[in-house]
Image 1 (cartoon, protein in one colour):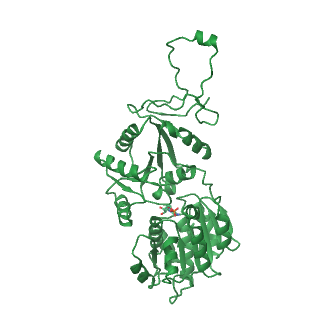
Image 2 (cartoon, rainbow, N blue to C red):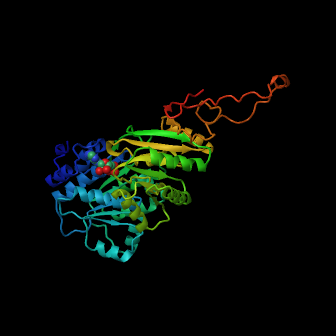
Image 3 (cartoon, rainbow, N blue to C red):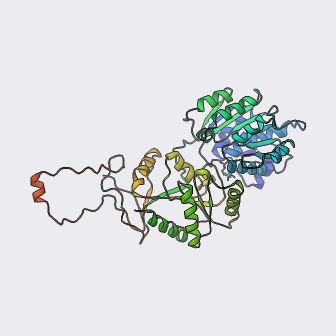
Length: 430
Ligand code: AMP
């Protein structure tokens, strides 16, 4: 129960208003150490409720010892603007019955008004590393009053090349601050260095491994021989499967733009979001999805991490993610906080082996699904290795006798990995 943590009553009131009845695992595991002011190092899966896990202890600390004259007291670093906005919104909701103000400092906004807003000294700043460094360089921000520093999605910040910036920002905060680091994995090169640079004898908390797939997400694959068939399958799924909101992932901006047009042409209420769009366009697309004006968002991986829009119950990967971690982050957009979700990946002939390695990495097997009338000619590799990958195509040399005995018009053998049409059947591996 949240009442077990002796949180400020204004926070308990907000939890009640948000209908957060009991803490999630990450909240139960993190909050005692965080409330005690210790540094914490948390490995937790995406969508586990980690925002409240650090926000509640921090809000409680601010309420417990008000400091009206000070500058920003909490700094939260996060990799993307969308995440920053989402975090700020979530914290505002938790702080709705208090005086505490949160502001965001992200790229993509004009610098001057941002500097002016900073002078108003919000208690909590949520920032992306690049823009915060700009403010430090121009001396439009001081971090001398920071009491709590949170590094959110630390692995992603390292992926995006922010290690040096993150370490510099940590060094610009007072030494006696509390630091909390959240990451899906600690395996990244550079993570040790960031931990050493930022943390003081942290309590290590490991929730589910990032390899473990949400149990609330049903994962399916549908085979397709080419892009034209994938397009048709996509439209079929969006018109026939029941869902509230869906995200369609592509690997490239070009394909995202193309598919958005194709879906709209097919009378599907779609929008698009990718890294080449302006911040306004991205925010606009997100708000259209949140308000339900569109129910499908085509996106590149810009959106895959952490973004939490209520009601996303379907994720379709038109192209398979390039890695197991990326796949987990994409499918993690659905099935959040105990809701049910479906993630469907459309697999072309060149993607089979990638899919198979992701299955092995995640220690799972996706359900095979077939759409009647849209099966196409690709039914998976004829032969599979023990690993599940396609067996090599090298043909064994037939000896002369065998050649002579070979019937000229022998029926081609059935592929080994036939699936049940219009149903789901596990693939039998030889
Ligand atoms: P996060 O991992 O912080 O992005 O949270 C994922 C989702 O879980 C968000 O939609 C939160 O509003 C929701 N959430 C977080 N904590 C709880 C809770 N204790 N009870 C119900 N929902 C929660």
